[in-house]
Length: 101
Image 1 (tube, one colour):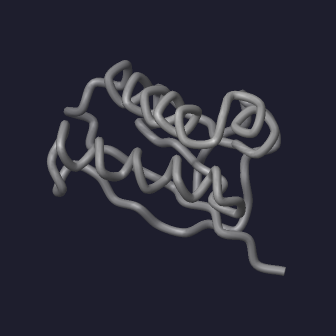
Image 2 (tube, one colour):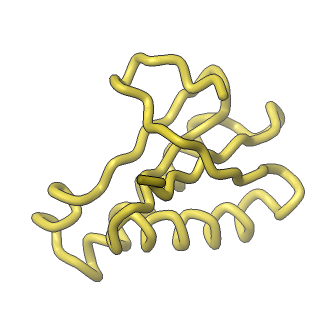
């Protein structure tokens, strides 16, 4: 079974704290669409400050919306050429697990 998981990798010039804030803003926006409970149940994402990378599980409608909104915010805030999005086959198992491809 293939899962839809999106991996975002940002250039080192993009401040990590701003990437993380943008991700959290996208999650907050999706709470407005689906409600806090549904986001808490259906959203899976993680961020690695050192690697300037984040992963969003887009296997649910909530996850797809987080990924779409985060992509839109990131394009507007940082520019299209400052990050790449790819699909990966798995989510990191823990928050501290390495986000290496």
